[in-house]
Length: 213
Ligand code: FE
View 1 (tube, rainbow, N blue to C red):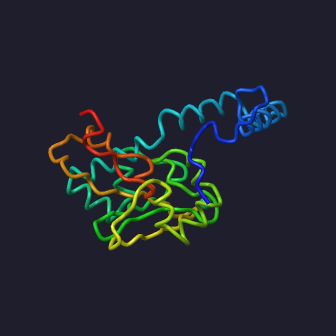
View 2 (spheres, rainbow, N blue to C red):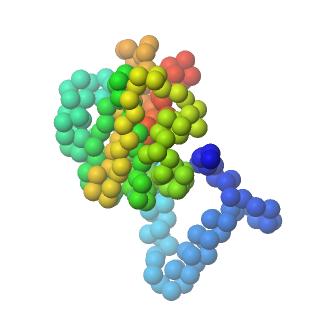
View 3 (cartoon, rainbow, N blue to C red):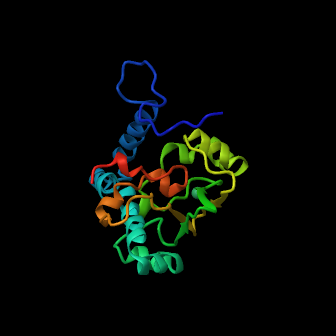
């Protein structure tokens, strides 16, 4: 069983349209809801624009970069995650109670929502398709090491993997370990190392040699 990665082309068929089945279904649903007056297209545009440009993993990357470079903030983040994250301006729906999880050489944290797709929106934006998929939701618990292998990396055998099940009440943000060789980098530079998947626990930060400072 392999995981479907977040590929916008996934699910496409040859039916003469540029749009995927899901996109077509969303479009049809939107037309009906607008026609019946249930939703305001302008309000929908604002929501979509917000989650496309303002809210996304770049927010979480700021939190992680600050935790890497500011010891006081790091302590605060792991004692009162919600307050510390809100101090950077990241608040809002689906982020009422976010708990930051610290990766160490001994423990690697990985987040799932076995029930549905609970996710810390203010810091990561909307969840990727694979996060909501049944294979990820079941296998993350049963075989986390195998899932990480599917995502392309292997942890040392003596690193324990802790899987956290999100709920509507509590959502998690993984703080990956700071890559070696990045001492003295600014927060902006550090943030470029932080990937979305590294904050879900299904990935690692980029290597310093792979980003331009
Ligand atoms: Fe959920």
